[in-house]
Image (cartoon, rainbow, N blue to C red; front, side, top):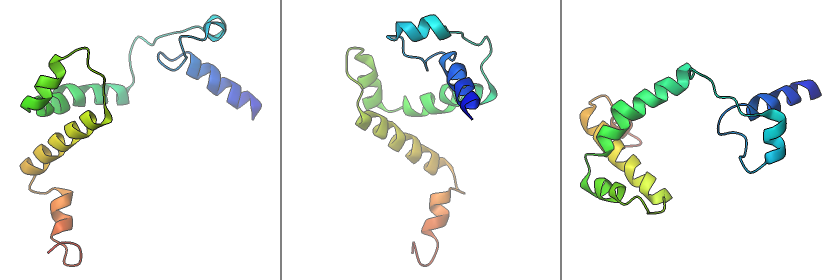
Length: 110
C-alpha cells in the first residue's frame, strides 16, 4: 500500500501544475516534466472551451467589457454569470433539454 501511495505522489509531482513552484526541495527531487501530448479528456475540454464555451459566453456585452480589464481580480460571481449565460443559451437552442423535460412532469412542473 505504501508503495502505491509513493508512486501516486511521485507521478503527481511530475505533472505540470500539480507540484508547487515554491517548494524548491520538491522540485529538486521530483523535477517537473511536461507531456508532449495531452490526453483525450484534456483535448476534449480544450476543444469544448474553444469552440463552444468561449463563443457563447463572449456574445454578452457585459462579459466582453469585464474581460477587457486585465488588472481586475477574478471573482466567483463572474464565473456564475458566465454559467448563467451559457445555460440560458443552451436551453434556448435545445428543444430536448433536460430542464424542459423536468418542468413538464406533473408533480414537479406544470
